[in-house]
Length: 68
Image (cartoon, rainbow, N blue to C red; front, top):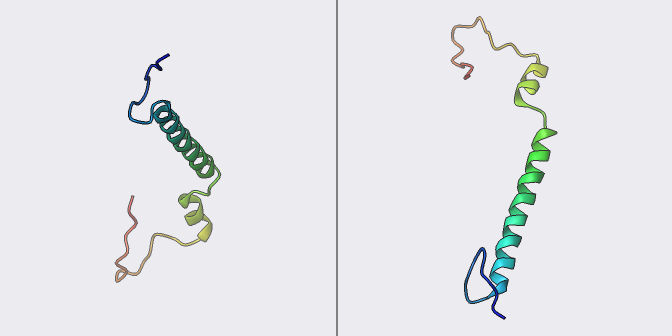
């Protein structure tokens, strides 16, 4: 009985598909973990608001500008 190649083909036979699918599964798991961690993180805008520093300064020698 000959196996039908679906996703990958090479000298490893059926193991090509196993390796290909496992790498894809690892990628999806890593992206899922990254997405969950980013959903629970504090945004930079919230950190800046909590600092209490004003972005408007009256000192004309200050050469810092807020980038948007």
